[in-house]
Length: 189
Image 1: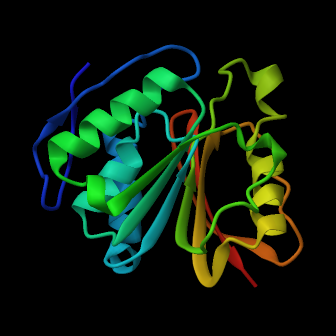
Image 2: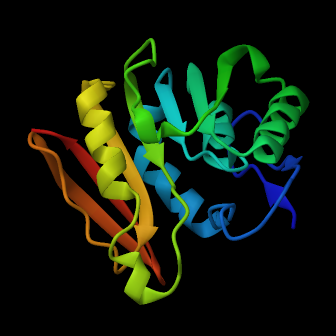
């Protein structure tokens, strides 16, 4: 599958699609385009966290559109290799940091705060399992680690039937739906 950077300095460049499977599904191009249309005013010079990065498509798009730095967190070795390859190919290696780790133990070890945090955890497409996804526990980890700047946004990609529970002090300010996929935009109150 060919994945193309949509806009910015790397516009039109094809990137390696790397591994695929139930845990690694690149964000659809139309969803990514819509996401970055919404993020346009905040992306330039931002510090961006791509959680559950998969192939890193969202973080790579952020770099192409002017993010100052992107931190990728992904636990699958083959996906991390694909991210490294694409960063080198696009010339973005100096603006990125990759951590191969499972975040279930927390995020307090991250040395900085972020303007934008995108989380696209794997989710099962079967409705009966989607209601208990990874978004809510990940939001709690983000809140506990205090890694979102006061003016920052969290964007969660999830199944439309997943029920999201927000930590105290956070609220949803926008939600968009694309078929079975939702993007939920969250900020501090």
